[in-house]
Length: 162
Image (cartoon, rainbow, N blue to C red; front, side, top):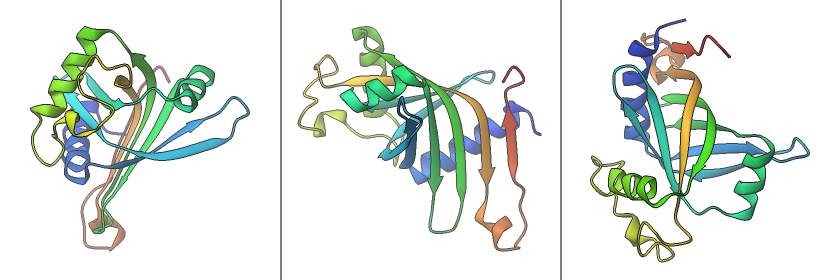
């Protein structure tokens, strides 16, 4: 197991290059459901946080109310993959929604984009716009070169209090 200070920057580099992740939640009956989402990550040298700009649909709300966890899996054609297993919580206050809106709006390419391109989100305070906060408890960074026998290192981190 590797420390978060080594894994988090490698995770962000790969995740922000790949951009889109398969995200899975679990319903109240224990059945998984996945969708494609576009997280952005922040690392301050000690703590890793992810944010997703999304609509707070009834399905997402119900799943996270039953089980407040989200699994994210990024994959690239090079077979680079990285995974974040996270606690997830809604941030519906205007201050946080504006912060997340601006993270994406002014974020580096290719992960950054203007959220206003989504017709249902004319502004960060639109009812259909929400921020989903991600607090990882487990990370894995798996370069495709490892899978293909070309060297590299798989990095893993897991929160101690898991």
